[in-house]
Length: 233
Image 1 (tube, helix red, strand yellow):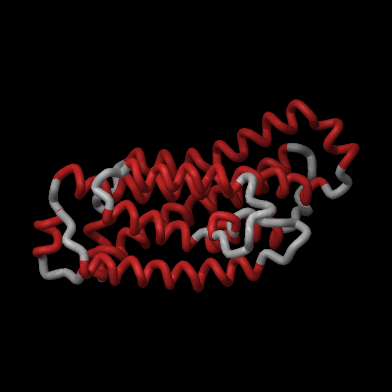
Image 2: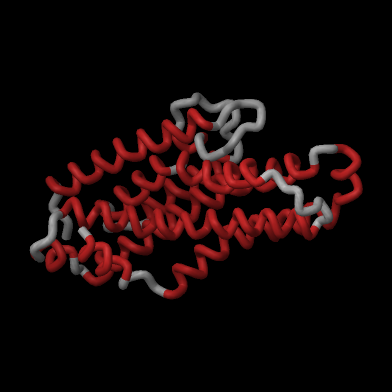
C-alpha cells in the first residue's frame, strides 16, 4: 500500500495544488466582497458576528468542496485513461484494492489541505474585519472540517466513477450537478449524500459527519469490489 501511495503521489501535477488553494481562496474572497458591500448592514443586523461569518462561509464551502472532489478525482484518474496505461498498471504486482484506495487517499489528502487553508483563512478574515482575536475556535474548526468528513461518500463515489468511466464527462457532470444541488438541498431528504456537507445552524451537524464517515467507507468498499471484477482498458 505504501509503495502504491508513493507512486500515486508522484502523479500529482503542480497545478493540482493550485486547485487545492483556489477553493478556500475563492470562498474567502467572496466573503471579502460580501462584507465590503454590506458591512454596516451585516454588523447592525447580526450581533453574533463570528456566527454569521461562518454561516456565510458555509454556503459556499459545500459546493466548492464537492466540485473540487469531482475535478481532482477526475484529473487523477484521467492520467491512466489518456495514456492507456491501466493494463500495464494492473499487470504489476500490486493489488487492485491498493490502486483504488490510494487514489481516494491522495484526493482526500488534497481536500484536507484545502480544509486547513479554509480554517486559517476564516480566522484571518474575521480578524481582518475587526471581529477581534477572541474567535470561536471549535466552531471554526467544525465549519472547516465537518463538510469534508460529511462529504466522504461523495468523494468515494467520484473516485469510483472517475476510475471506471473512460469518458470523464460522466463523473464531472455528476460532480457539477451535486455541487449546484448542494446549495439548494435544505429541504432534500436526509439520505441524499450531497446534502450532508452543508451544515445547518439550527440542527446538530454531528450525525451527518458520522454518516459521512460510515457511508464513505461503505461506498469506498463497494468501489473496490467493483474495480476488482471489472476489466479496465
